[in-house]
Length: 256
Ligand code: PAF
Image (cartoon, rainbow, N blue to C red; front, side, top):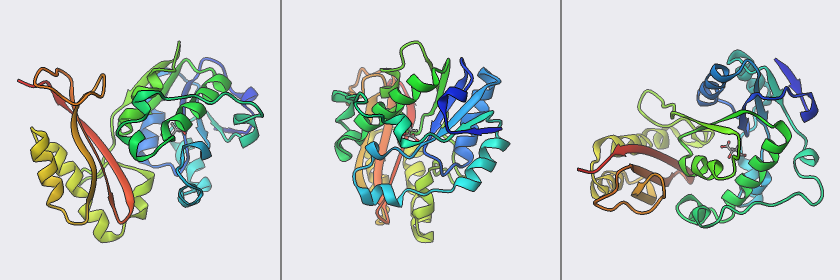
C-alpha cells in the first residue's frame, strides 16, 4: 500500500472509499467490496471540519493514524490518501447545498451537516475521479444524498456491519461507557422486532439510557413518512446514549 498526500499520485478509474479515519471492521468491509470492482482501491482519510456542528465535536472525533494504516493495508487498499486541508479546500472552493433532503432527520438535528458532507465528497470526487465509490448503508441519508451528486460515478451501497449483539459499527461506539454499550443493544432489538412504528418506539422507550431523536418508518426512496401504500419501507432510528449520537436503519420490505 502506498501512502500519498497529493491526489496527482492516485491512479485513474479506481474504486474509492472516502473515510474520516478511526477505521474499524466496517471500513475494512468497504475496502474489500471496493477490491471486487478494481485492483486500484483508493481510500482517503480526511476529518472534514465542515460536517461537524461545533469545534468541540470536531476535536472529540477519534484519530488513530497508526492503526488506520494497518487496517487499510490489511484490507487491500492500494493507495491511502491523506490530503492536506489546503488541497481539499483551496481559496474559493464551491460549497454544495444538500437541499430539502438535507434538512430532515439527521439534517434537522445537525444543521448544515449534509451541506458539509456533500461539499467534501464533491471535492474528493473531483480530485480522485473514481469510477466507483463505496458508502455504508448505515449512514443511509448520507448515501442517498451522495447519489444526487455522483454524476457518472457508480455509487455502491455496502451493508451495515454489526457487533455480535447487533450494534452497528461506528467510530463513535468507543465513547460509550460499558453500561451505555450494553444499553445500545436496544436499537438493533427494536429494529428487528418491530413491524410497526409504534412498536419500534415502544421498544426504544423501554431503555431508560436511550434518549430518542427519531424513530420513523419512511419510504426509502423519498424519505417521506411511510403511508399504507409505501412499497420500499425503511425504519430509521437516531438517539443518544451517554451523550453519544447513535444512528441505525433497516429495510422493512413492503407493507401488506
Ligand atoms: O461517512 C463518512 O465517514 C463521512 O461523512 C465522509 C463520507 C467520508 C465525508 O467526510
